Image (cartoon, rainbow, N blue to C red; front, top):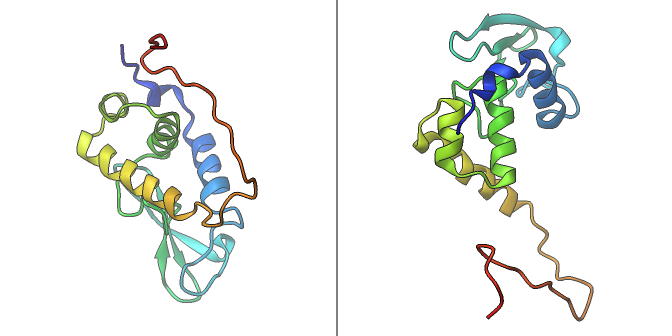
Length: 145
Protein backbone atom coordinates (compact mmCIF):
# COMPACT_ATOMS: atom_id res chain seq x y z
CA UNK A 1 0.00 0.00 0.00
CA UNK A 2 1.37 3.39 -1.01
CA UNK A 3 0.74 6.50 1.05
CA UNK A 4 0.55 10.08 -0.27
CA UNK A 5 3.32 10.97 2.13
CA UNK A 6 4.20 14.33 0.57
CA UNK A 7 0.93 15.69 1.95
CA UNK A 8 2.12 14.91 5.49
CA UNK A 9 5.35 16.94 5.40
CA UNK A 10 5.92 20.61 6.10
CA UNK A 11 7.32 22.62 3.18
CA UNK A 12 9.34 25.03 5.34
CA UNK A 13 10.97 22.24 7.34
CA UNK A 14 11.83 20.37 4.16
CA UNK A 15 13.37 23.52 2.67
CA UNK A 16 15.44 24.12 5.82
CA UNK A 17 16.67 20.50 5.79
CA UNK A 18 17.70 20.79 2.14
CA UNK A 19 19.43 24.11 2.78
CA UNK A 20 21.35 22.60 5.69
CA UNK A 21 22.50 19.57 3.67
CA UNK A 22 22.87 21.01 0.15
CA UNK A 23 24.45 24.33 1.18
CA UNK A 24 26.03 23.92 4.65
CA UNK A 25 27.79 27.30 4.36
CA UNK A 26 24.58 29.04 3.35
CA UNK A 27 23.02 29.72 -0.03
CA UNK A 28 25.32 31.90 -2.16
CA UNK A 29 25.40 33.28 -5.68
CA UNK A 30 27.22 30.75 -7.87
CA UNK A 31 28.91 33.50 -9.89
CA UNK A 32 30.14 36.06 -7.35
CA UNK A 33 29.60 34.30 -4.00
CA UNK A 34 27.26 36.92 -2.49
CA UNK A 35 25.12 35.64 0.34
CA UNK A 36 21.38 35.02 0.05
CA UNK A 37 20.65 38.08 2.20
CA UNK A 38 22.24 40.27 -0.49
CA UNK A 39 19.96 38.85 -3.19
CA UNK A 40 16.36 39.68 -3.95
CA UNK A 41 13.50 37.29 -4.50
CA UNK A 42 13.08 37.14 -8.27
CA UNK A 43 10.09 34.80 -8.49
CA UNK A 44 8.56 31.60 -7.17
CA UNK A 45 8.15 28.63 -9.51
CA UNK A 46 4.61 27.49 -10.18
CA UNK A 47 5.01 23.71 -9.93
CA UNK A 48 7.63 23.32 -7.23
CA UNK A 49 7.01 26.52 -5.27
CA UNK A 50 10.78 27.07 -5.17
CA UNK A 51 12.07 30.62 -4.62
CA UNK A 52 14.39 31.87 -7.36
CA UNK A 53 16.84 34.54 -6.21
CA UNK A 54 18.56 37.21 -8.30
CA UNK A 55 21.91 38.48 -7.09
CA UNK A 56 22.06 42.25 -6.68
CA UNK A 57 25.79 42.27 -7.48
CA UNK A 58 25.93 40.34 -10.78
CA UNK A 59 22.26 39.64 -11.75
CA UNK A 60 22.77 35.86 -11.66
CA UNK A 61 19.66 33.81 -10.82
CA UNK A 62 19.90 30.78 -8.55
CA UNK A 63 17.83 28.59 -6.28
CA UNK A 64 18.13 26.01 -3.53
CA UNK A 65 18.79 23.27 -6.10
CA UNK A 66 21.66 25.09 -7.84
CA UNK A 67 24.68 22.79 -8.19
CA UNK A 68 22.77 19.62 -7.31
CA UNK A 69 21.28 16.75 -9.32
CA UNK A 70 17.88 18.38 -8.73
CA UNK A 71 18.75 21.51 -10.70
CA UNK A 72 16.33 22.13 -13.60
CA UNK A 73 13.80 19.68 -12.15
CA UNK A 74 10.37 20.80 -11.03
CA UNK A 75 10.30 18.95 -7.70
CA UNK A 76 8.97 20.30 -4.45
CA UNK A 77 11.30 20.33 -1.44
CA UNK A 78 9.17 17.58 0.16
CA UNK A 79 9.58 15.37 -2.91
CA UNK A 80 13.35 15.91 -2.87
CA UNK A 81 13.67 15.04 0.82
CA UNK A 82 11.61 11.87 0.40
CA UNK A 83 13.43 10.92 -2.78
CA UNK A 84 16.85 11.21 -1.12
CA UNK A 85 15.53 9.26 1.87
CA UNK A 86 14.08 6.53 -0.36
CA UNK A 87 17.26 6.15 -2.39
CA UNK A 88 19.37 5.93 0.79
CA UNK A 89 17.01 3.30 2.21
CA UNK A 90 17.05 1.28 -1.02
CA UNK A 91 13.35 1.69 -1.80
CA UNK A 92 12.32 0.40 -5.24
CA UNK A 93 12.08 3.00 -8.00
CA UNK A 94 8.49 2.09 -8.84
CA UNK A 95 7.36 2.52 -5.22
CA UNK A 96 9.09 5.89 -4.89
CA UNK A 97 7.58 7.06 -8.17
CA UNK A 98 4.07 6.13 -7.08
CA UNK A 99 4.36 7.65 -3.61
CA UNK A 100 5.88 10.91 -4.87
CA UNK A 101 3.71 11.29 -7.96
CA UNK A 102 6.67 11.13 -10.36
CA UNK A 103 7.46 8.98 -13.38
CA UNK A 104 9.69 5.93 -12.99
CA UNK A 105 12.09 7.43 -15.53
CA UNK A 106 12.54 10.58 -13.47
CA UNK A 107 13.14 8.66 -10.25
CA UNK A 108 15.51 6.26 -12.04
CA UNK A 109 17.57 9.12 -13.55
CA UNK A 110 17.86 10.90 -10.20
CA UNK A 111 18.76 7.63 -8.45
CA UNK A 112 21.56 7.00 -10.97
CA UNK A 113 22.88 10.55 -10.56
CA UNK A 114 22.85 10.28 -6.75
CA UNK A 115 24.61 6.92 -6.88
CA UNK A 116 27.22 8.27 -9.32
CA UNK A 117 27.92 11.18 -6.97
CA UNK A 118 28.22 8.82 -4.01
CA UNK A 119 30.59 6.58 -5.99
CA UNK A 120 32.75 9.57 -6.92
CA UNK A 121 33.05 10.52 -3.23
CA UNK A 122 34.25 7.08 -2.14
CA UNK A 123 37.85 7.00 -0.87
CA UNK A 124 40.39 5.49 -3.24
CA UNK A 125 42.96 4.63 -0.59
CA UNK A 126 43.15 0.97 0.48
CA UNK A 127 42.02 -0.11 3.93
CA UNK A 128 44.70 0.00 6.62
CA UNK A 129 43.92 -3.49 7.90
CA UNK A 130 45.66 -6.46 6.33
CA UNK A 131 42.68 -8.72 7.01
CA UNK A 132 38.98 -7.97 7.05
CA UNK A 133 36.02 -9.93 8.35
CA UNK A 134 32.56 -10.18 6.89
CA UNK A 135 29.41 -11.51 8.47
CA UNK A 136 27.18 -14.09 6.86
CA UNK A 137 24.36 -12.62 4.88
CA UNK A 138 21.01 -14.24 4.35
CA UNK A 139 19.35 -13.30 1.08
CA UNK A 140 15.59 -13.50 0.69
CA UNK A 141 15.31 -14.71 4.31
CA UNK A 142 16.55 -18.10 3.19
CA UNK A 143 18.47 -20.63 5.19
CA UNK A 144 22.09 -21.67 4.80
CA UNK A 145 22.80 -24.36 2.28
